[in-house]
Length: 136
Image (cartoon, rainbow, N blue to C red):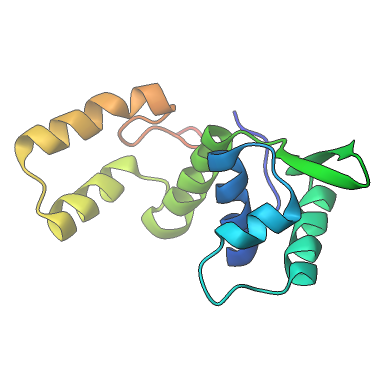
């Protein structure tokens, strides 16, 4: 079971995505990797400090600055987010999620089969209880 994570804003998730993709980074490098228009350096620095307070980011001093790194693995946060999505929009039912995407994305039988085969590897199973969902 994944630990519950604090809620992240869109901007915080965007910075975390960069840290997961790029690895340890300086605030100035994170800022330059963001889409235009670039936010102020102080804005990115504030977001990184908030992520540090939430336990997502750690740092190491390098010279007169700091290099930041992710403390939470991307896969762990991905699983947490997916389970939250399942509980919030699909009543905890993996089957309802698959049905929704099958209809919305016009998935064929092979794509559905691949999705269902991958679910157990991700800690999900069709209509299995998710965290915080009682067993029958």
